[in-house]
Length: 364
Ligand code: SF4
Image (cartoon, rainbow, N blue to C red; front, side):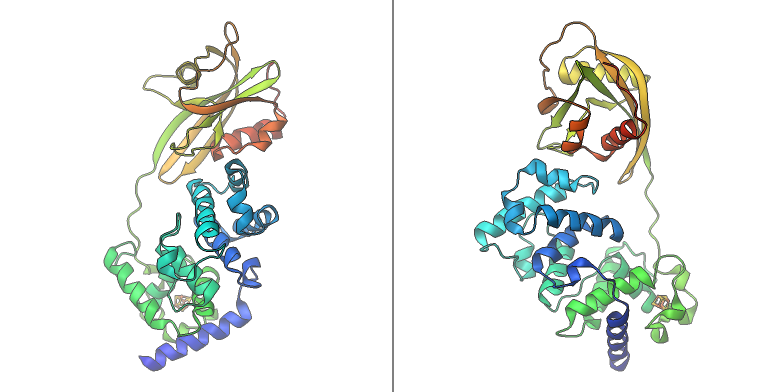
């Protein structure tokens, strides 16, 4: 077993020197860069993450810039990545690091764990990749590689399976080389030992892969039955008055708190999307509106939900008045161009993009 572990370590590290992905945070392993990349890459594809990472660094080149920024600016630069609590927590953590840790990212995973938005995986990733601490990092790629290497037959999401995979990852880790070994395992899972059609003929550790020897590659890892996707129908209205569009800012403690939106919400039983828009406007803002035209219907997937959002252009019925703000903390009347300056949830941003790309004229 020990000689196999030694061979796996050497093969993976050799492979990494030749085949490592060229990623911007790997140029100097600056802890700030590693931290940002790890938070951004949660639930985000690599290419997309690299784009957002580079754009982020242009605006927030260091931890001071994040700590001192307006929250709206932080959310704006996060727009498109979703899961906005990550951006808010990132800024909270930056402020703590500036005030309590002399603007340094802590190198101790236990200290990292006390910071907002940093869980066990991210703490391990920062400590090992930025500071080369001897801690195994287990993401979905690593889970898959280990489940196949050791032909693990338990459901991948089961607590017992996770514990076993973690123990094996710790066992495989060569002391003093965590930075490279962890990334080698992650890259190998992302590039070679992929979920579908793994390239076993190119694999640096095929010589000891038990799933390959047993003919179980496509059965590992053992899937956990997927949860049901819940469909949700929503409607929203783009209200225009004297050439300006009404937007409101969600309350801070709300889901997507701090982001901007057009008023709207879920359809009630038996309600049409148009009826829902008129009702929601009345409830949320006090405005009586009339639906003028359908703008677009966009579909957005969010965790276990499939959200169908019906967007309409609207106009005021009756006299102009100030909004009531029953579901928001602030509001603006903005031009269509100014919509680009505010952070919106993905569904509303899709609606805006559709309006822009189709050059759909909003009624005045
Ligand atoms: Fe994955 Fe195939 Fe390599 Fe086994 S041999 S670790 S299944 S790529």
